[in-house]
Structure formats: structure tokens, C-alpha cells
Length: 510
Image 1 (cartoon, rainbow, N blue to C red):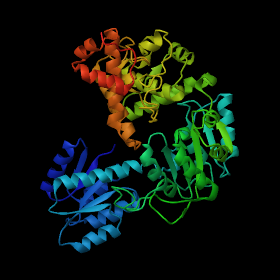
Image 2: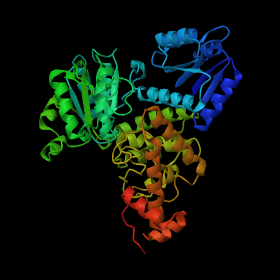
Image 3: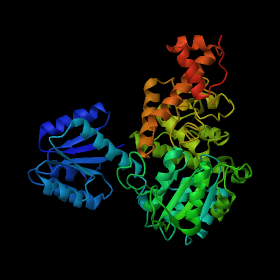
């Protein structure tokens, strides 16, 4: 997540906001004038901009106008005096997110900045420039078929259903379909339907009217409206609640929907691309997915191959991910020896491309030296153990989060701790090189999740962290809860509750 920029010629205002935001663990960058901030915009951008209106030289309104011209989606909070009503009105006309009237309550100021921050993170995926679309790599025949299909669909607006195992790159293909379609210059909106709590998903999809429910203080556009004239990508469509499937079917059928609490139909001109790793036909038979919605989505089906079906692509993917990871961390790119590449090519990788990317992130941070040998790889891989499948493993990383809800592309907690899929110790692979490495990976994962606009990040990572610790402690105490609680420094009631909450098996009273 990028820092919050504070622009004010009053050093005391800057200091107060810096300290208040630091207590919230929010990074800041301060400027004494609008001119300084505009110069900084040449090379960087903030997540939220907070600016005084009345400053020598460039005023806050001048800064607002310049910023909105270059970065229309950036939330800008302006600071003004109570008596300066004209400036407050002008700031809203100029596109300000909100304004703070002096003297302001610091807690209310932080709450307002947090609201702007959440809005910025939530809408981060709305307008992604075509040049930022990730490249799809692959020379294998199975991937060439995918490329050919994208080419055939390039001038079509038809609905597409993308299927394939977790980690095969379904969102990348959806972005490529959008990039090469007649809607390429319009928004591409991605929504993981499994990542949003059921009671919020309807509002997230269709928006809500002011007063529709507690906390709905203003009308908000949903993803369908944000994607108007563009493409809406619905990931993990198989997990969509049954009652919402009915509303989605109605939109696909007649092109209209209602905001939550609304009474006027809203027309939607949106191309829908859906994706799932599940067997939708089986879910239809089980009564978990509407058959009529399935047929509406299954106009064109595009199946992505697993990495097992395209092993010849592994060397080029490894080189690509190592370069990408090194660039993100600002370090020199690691190189794989021929033996190490051959070893990786022969591995079973149930997490597919995502697992391979996770592994390359681990290598960049943890492997000693610039040339990586087989012995430098995680011990759970080199000891020829069965490939892990749990959410706390290197294989899947945080591909499903808690209950299969969160998609991600960075190492999971299991990878950080060198644990296998059951949460058992896989030697001390990740810890052998010191604890700074796994903390760095944890920070990288948190930063990625936040930058992707995911919610409840602390809860997701915290649950995985707790699960990894408790599973490992139970293994060392042969499943005895009392001993495990003592070793972890927590109470018996606490570990009993955590075991139940996290669904951990294999524990016994004594």
C-alpha cells in the first residue's frame, strides 16, 4: 500500500497528522507546499492525498485540479477553515473526496482518512491501463490452444466461462480477453465472489441507495455500474450464494438490475466473464448452482491446463518470476542451475503457476548465493515428500485463505514457516536462514493483499498463523492439548477454542 501524502505549510498540522496516522500503522509523506507535492507526482503517487486549501504559491484547489487531471480516481481530502464555505464548495466541485474544517478533531480526521483509504483500495482494480495487463507466458501446445481461443474471441462480446485448477491463471486470461476485445478502452472490474461476505456481496455487485441499510450514508455504485461498457470478471462463481445467483441470472437475461434499496431499474451494458475451479455440472446436480444460470454463463468455455500438462513452460516461468520478484524487492535476480531447473520441472505442483510464483518469491528471499542449486530449495520439496495441498502450505500459499475465500499470488504462512500441508514441520527450511526472511515474506504478502483491495487481511493471515503454530505444537506433543498449550504459552480453554474455530484435527485431551 502506498503512503498517505500530507500537504500543508503549517508544520504543526503536518506533525499532528503524521503522529496520529503513525499510531494507526499508516505510512505518510509530508510536503510544505503544493509545488513540492506536484514535483513528487512526477515519480510517485499516494494512496490518499490530504491538502490544505490556503497555502502560499500553489493553493490546495490548484493542487486538487492538477491531481484530478492526472489521477481522477485518487481520493483527495482538503483542509479548510470553518468560515471558508466558498472553498469547501469549490473543493467538492473540483472532485474532492471530503473536507476537514479547522479546527478538526484528530480522531475524526483519522477516521475520514481511513474511509478514503478503504475507498482507494476497493477501487484500485477499476481502471487498469492496458499496458499494465500481466503477460501470459507459455509455449506448450496446451497454452497455444488458449492463445488461439483468445484470438478467436478478440472481436466478440460473448460471455465466457473459464475453468481450471486453482493457480492456473484464470484472471490473467480474463484480462487478456478484455484487452483484446472491443471494450479494451473501458473498465475491467474483477470481483472474487468468494472473498466477500454473503451479506455484503449483493451491495458489492449491484450497489445500494442511501439509507438502504445501517451504515449506507450515501448512494454507492456496484461493480456492474463500475464496469459499464467494459468487462466484469466474476471469479469463483461456483461459490456465489444461491439467492444471488437468481439476481445475476436476471441481469444476464434482460440487462437490468436494481440497487439494494432501489426502485428504479439500472441498465447494464457489461460483458461478463466468469471463472471457477469447481465442477459446476456437479454443483448443479447437487442443487448448489442454478442450472439456468450455468447455461447462461457457459456460452463459451475456456479450460486452462494445469502445470502438469505444460511442464516445458516451467523454465521460462521460473525465469520470469525470479526477475519479477527481484524487481519488487529491489534485489539482484537469482539464477537457477540446470540441475535445479530439471528438478523443478519434474515436481508435482498442485498449486500450478501460483505455487511456482510463490516458490520463486521464497527463492529470491531465502536462497543463499546468486546461483540456486537443488540443495537451496525448500526442504519439504527436496526431501521428496508428497506435495502438500493444505491452505497453509507452500504449494497453495494463500490461494484460498479461510474457507476458500481469498485469492493471492504470494507465499502463504506455511511457506514462511517451512510447514507441510498438515501444518507439520518440514524441517526448518524457511527458518534456516534466520527469522528476518519469513517476516519479510509476511510483510510482502500483507502488502500484496492490501494493494489488491482484499478485506479482513489481519484476520486471514492471523488465522493461518495461529493454525500453523497450533498444528506444529500438537505434532510435537503427539496431539496432547495441555502440553501444546503450555509450550505455546496459552491457556487450555484458549487452545480448545482455537482448535474448534480453525478446524484442527488430531488433538486429544491427554
